[in-house]
Picture 1 (cartoon, rainbow, N blue to C red):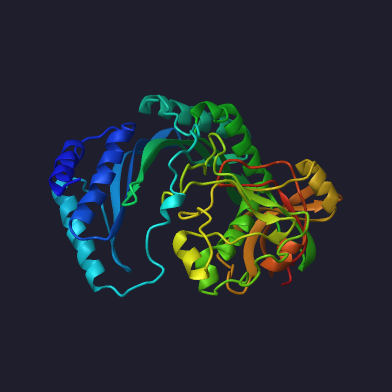
Picture 2 (picture 1 turned 90 degrees about the vertical axis):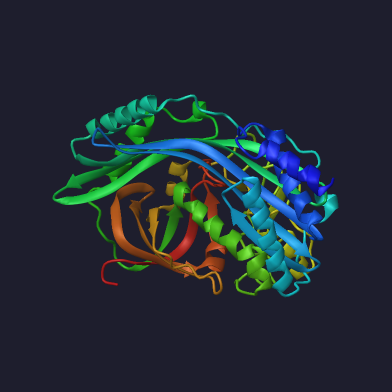
Length: 460
């Protein structure tokens, strides 16, 4: 394609493309790449994102915020051999793109050579990929969203007289498109939606206040839980925290509730990521093929789950995503790699440029209540505070709140405690995973029972 043709085609589609006009978006991204090649780049890629939606927040029956969003952006990388230059912009007019291309080429001219830089291999491009059913626009007006939020807050506030205040109910809906093209001739795009409702409350008992809440989210608004169920859940979680106290310092078994257990898997992902590995800045360096978790633990990635939060047909480099097993019966099967980090390590990409997608830990055939019964006496963690996790050393120390459990039953709420251990010990001491899987995010796990952790509370 000549540069003149690329310019004329870009001008035809750059102005106001609808989010669902996939072919026009692919044309724009491809033409940007063609312009880069015509101006001297040896390779190039372009990623475009466009989204629209709104978010409202109601507090104490009044509209606190109402935000409309319509955003778009372009990220461009050009290569001159092993030199590269990258530019991002939000103005997709022809003149702005032309200026961005010139800047990217100038940057590439003066950067140092990187032997690991470049596009992912052409043979790995997602030339054919499945439909993942992740685009479901929510036909809801702002007035209807305000009514939903107001009704949810009203029900939640009326649930228990100990609920004294509201921190707000939020309703949001967004739809967007992700587009990627490169000089291999690849151009791909997919549309996606996300919708959520959240409710946060303040309870008071004997002069002391606690805040808590709950939320629901889904690709398809028809799969959001009902307003009544959300209000009840948010209220129950709030009043359950009233009367919290500390506990004596000691070593106890700990259950991470499903809503916070996903953070443990997130730490493992960070530690096993290619960037951490090749920089040797993780406690999982040289652990490939070795046991890093208890033998009962298997962690899998399934980027093609229908309607799931993390589903995507290709990664940030256009590589076809595929289901993989990260940890099998406790053994680390592979690192989490992009093409760049893979080249650094002499390994192929795992199609994880841009992160993991729908990571799931296997669970046992037992309910949350059965998991507490298995623990007996110990700590149930419902909330984590602070950033005391060191991926380099594996040291783990965070503030926590939750419940003390006696003889397998919740006894009373606890707060002002710190839990500490080492991530490698925690993963090795995973005794059970309940079947109360939280599917609202990119990491899907049930509640996790850890055999023993140090808990600093009263008298620490």
